[in-house]
Image (cartoon, rainbow, N blue to C red; front, side, top):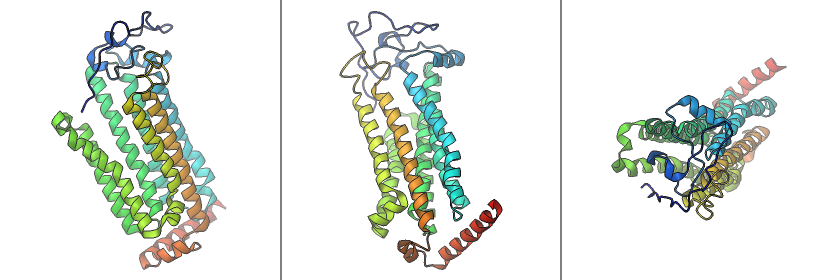
Length: 334
């Protein structure tokens, strides 16, 4: 349900408009059209509606109340687009038992996060274009969230059920199905109707809660200690903490609700959410790195917990293939 918007009084509006060097005058809350009004506690620093993509892009060159939202995710996207280079050199090439599957699941995470941040930054850049473009950009923003959630769960499932390809496939199929439904709910015109909103929310909730299901299943099967080594559950807890903190602050709309005008440009709740999501992505990256490092340092045949698990012929064949592939890659590198 949409939050009712409170119109700012003339007393709350800034007496002197904020200006940007070489740019058009920025607007206050009561000067912008209703489709630009999202947070009634942000009273100044708005770009005027332009109807021009060129003008939207030019706003990258001056400060307004979307600047931090844009650049936080531009920097985040650049970080996660380049991080795989270090990840590949520092981890993948270090271990002869590492396989192409490791590269694939890691790539889904890095590029899933990158795409999310790119779409988010795009939305905030073009959000002052027109109602139609703003609506489309909002869809891109939600699409990016779905891609991030899907891309983050793929490697966690892979490492969490490293010796059980059947459970890997089941959970991959589940999360991919839920993600596909969320994409449809995000992009299909029918799902924009207010009456459909509860079903759309249920799909997003299902995708988010799917991670809880496979994490708990892994703990029930193998215990906390083993799954913490496989999945870096302590790091995943930090990921959840950052995301929860950002969501709560965003929903509460603090600190701008407490100090009108002071946090219009820097430090408002939406910006805190953006930074929290970037920090969550970094925490997830460190957690996956540690899980990768642990699995390939100990190996499925060296660690007791894995030796007990990898006993069926399917898994033996899998690891024989992985080992032979890794040996060939080691010889090639040598």
